[in-house]
View 1 (cartoon, rainbow, N blue to C red):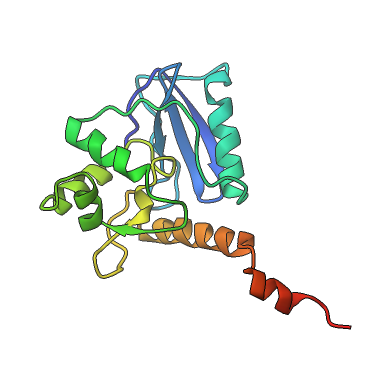
View 2 (spheres, rainbow, N blue to C red):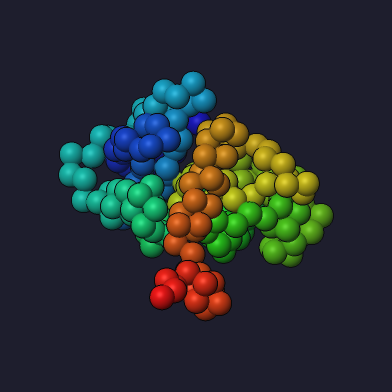
Length: 184
């Protein structure tokens, strides 16, 4: 996917491959996934490589924490350019809890357009800030993985990563804690 031009960009080496972050100098305007062959996302032709990573420091720190399993939400200024319907769909993505999935139909219902599941899928496919705006958490109605700009293996990796983090961080119930206590 060709990144939107923001004004600036940086490359970010992630566990899923090289990503490109774009910014208008105030907010993140894009997080672009590696090409399906694993090569880096296409660098924006009309943007400048950031000489001062200040606009990106917070995003890089939060992505590092996300990939390390230490962060489940992002708190970043975002500027999402799209139609009003796309922005509505993308804002709904931000409400999907970490480590959970919903269907395209459920996302359409959440935005008050229950008949628009295909349009929601198309909007998700144009999401300019992948991972941070978690379109990977939307799956087909039968639980099947469908469509993802970075390819289905990357979508599965992100879902597996989040599930593993949740499994690792789940506190046992009080009853289970008693069962885990050593007996004398």
